[in-house]
Length: 418
Ligand code: NIG
Ligand code: FE
Image 1 (tube, protein in one colour):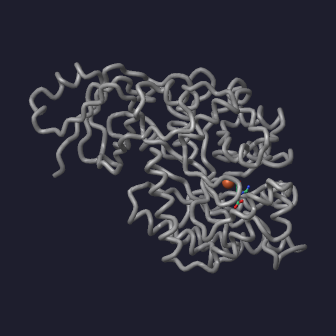
Image 2 (cartoon, protein in one colour):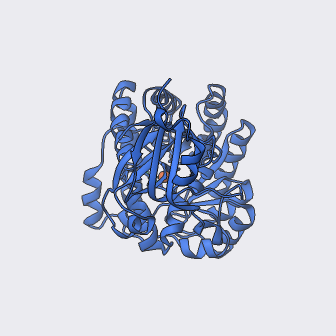
Image 3 (cartoon, protein in one colour):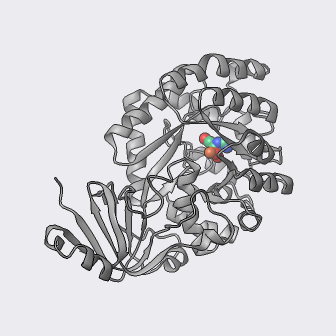
């Protein structure tokens, strides 16, 4: 039996707790359930009590001596951050492309010339499972250092059955060896592999007939994602792939309207996707359709910045009733970062989310985007004790002092990992 932990005298405890269940939008994104001079009691990996320090002193009067005490005077405490969209398992790196883009090449130019996703696919095919585990472990360690305790991860640098399975199996193994919770997504439709060039529909058939059944049978993924973009997969092809995945119980997600408006947001609403990602160029109709269908907008402001594009219309989406989550999109091309705190800052600066909305987008709504809202994303009795103690006194200060990692300590399932 491990000792209970009592984190007390928390200057600002942002619980993110609410009676309302499900993704939050509009005013609900600003309700952080703040408790001043707050306390958390953790035991057996879960939150046993949340309240003011006075309340917990009363509740645990008889057991106060048993606990390890953490005095959080002067500190903000939040739920562990959740990153609902990453491509964290990959081989190699692409720093030369960064220079090429600064010299004028576009993301799509590079990809169409065999670089970009294709370059990482070659390096990921070549890497052994051990090498991928070793490289991904380092990235996950960095996520923890930045206060992230749950991470979604996509395949998609295989584009053949063998390597897609290798990426997904790496995630399964890391689930056992690393403290971070990894949530797996199959993204066989990340690009059309060169050997299928001009035969895109055949690749879609191959993916549906030969890959999806095995991924599902081996229970290697919970979600099914598609890069729906001009020159990659059409809305029709994307719909076929996502509908086929549904037959196997895989929940749809879509990389939508990133580079050009392409009806991706509309498609996300139509197929009942849990989330649509990027959405830089989403149409007004698409945004309205998402608000109606309850599809979460998973926005990636670090990617927009890195590609020197205008960020998605996060402010407008929230005002129109779309629940917004944010993510790093951690990947070797368009967003090589593991810093969710930076993404929270950028959500404010480049999408005009308020500091409170930005925190909701990185915790509770992010958990909803990967179906983990019953386990993580807020402090409620019985939920996982995934906790960040910050070197700032309030969430306002966290969002204001930008570009700095303010993490002081992190607990994952009640165990201190940072
Ligand atoms: O979400 N847009 C497509 N996929 C990734 C980038 C992958 C890469 O460049 O390796 C994204 O930005
Ligand atoms: Fe992505």
